[in-house]
Each structure stands twice: as C-alpha cells, then as structure tokens.
Image (cartoon, rainbow, N blue to C red):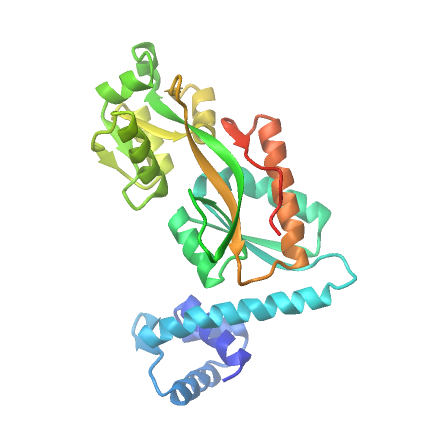
Length: 312
C-alpha cells in the first residue's frame, strides 16, 4: 500500500463512483478497480460496497478514509512547504467556516490573499460548527473558525471575535415591542434545531435570564428563519451582522438585550498534531487582517475583536 493507493481510494469515496473518480484521476476505470481489489486483498477486508447507485465505504473503509485523508493532506502540506522554501508561500490552504461567518468573510479574504500571495489557493468549506469541527479533526481543513467555549487538548485555539446576538422581529412588530424581554415573552420563538451550536448557547443564556420557552418552529437555515420572522410567524435570535442587510432594507426589525447583551465568541483554531505551513501562516495573517478591517469599517456589525495575538 502506497500513497497513490490512498489517493485513489479517497477520490473514489468522495466521488461515490469509479467512473467519476477515474475521470478526476485521469486513469482508466478498469485499472482503478484493479487497484481497489488489490488494496482489499492486502488488507484482507472489503473496503467498498458497490451498488447500482455508486459505491459507499464499509466500516473498514470509513476507518481507512479517515486515516488516508490525514496522510494525504500531511504529505501535500510537506511537499508544498519544501517547494516554497526561499520563495513566496504557495500551495493550497483549506479553511472551514460556519455559514454566517463565511457569508461575510470568504470573499474579502480570498481577494486579499490572491493580491498578497498569488501562489496560494484557498478552499473554503462552509457548514454548521459541528461539521466544521469534524473536518478539522479528520484533516479535511487546515484551520477553522469555530464557536466554542473551551478548547480541547488536540485543538490549538485563539479567541478571534465576539458577536452580539439580537432579537429579530417582523417589521410591524417593532412599533409594539419595547425590548427583547417583551418580545420573547409575547411572541412565538423560532430557533435552529438542537444540533446547531447557536441553539445550545441561546437556550443556556435565556434560561439564566428566565426567558426560555420551547421554540414554536425549528429550522437549520438562517435565511428560512429570517423569512419566517418577516412573514409574522414569530421572533428569533441571530447575530447582528446576519440580519443587518434585512434591517437596512426595511424587511425586518430587531431589538437588543438592554443591560445584559448576549454575545457568542468565535475562535480561530487548528489541530495540534499538524504544524502550520508557511502558506497556512500567510493565510492566517490575512484572515486576521481581514476580520480587523471588516470590524473597523462597521461592515461586520455587532462584532468586537477579542485578541490581537496570532496562532503559533
């Protein structure tokens, strides 16, 4: 078993098809099938379940996929680091971002990096924080921004910023609602499901304020939540910047938590077992500078920087 076998296997699982993987790898499909059969024979176990709708990994295949991704990613990082010695940083940097942060950060970060480091390619993967954390642990992203209260032994974490959460209201309700407490006591609550990090944090904060009640509607989509609120189905709690455009356009209204604002902290993280390459560090610097610019220019509304230090 060599690194090429691992790359082939990862590609097959990602594509879910031998034919699509063969096209991506630019090799003949029969040759790819032979490679997998030899790999299964070497490991003495079935790695893939073949069916009419494609292929899926077995339990053994899932374990190999987890390890193979980390090995392939580590080798790619090592190759890029060696090639860039004495030169401008180059290579691919993969970043995992929660949806609300990706929406405001991705484009300016890519633009800044392409200008400063044209030899670096950024790949941004967007999902809820739980999925981003899995990608980080599996080595599918090099760094990430996560909403987390405390670090884990395997995660190197630096506080990046905090976002103010506000109560989102239908436009017409703003004339009747005096404050956040009034809204939460008198309107149905719309929140993400329990699998969403925001939901857990909001529940905890509202219970401390004796304001929590079971949500009337649960949906894991900020755009859907905003549409539901705009159409009068209730109120919600979201980051200020996630609703600023809708408020400016007159579609929605909001009230803050007077006297005791609710904040959630975002941390810049990477896995302790994977050293940061020169390309990673270059993108890290650009990311922090981009966040500073967005906050200082008031584009990232309701956000405050937490720490000026950088990850080592």
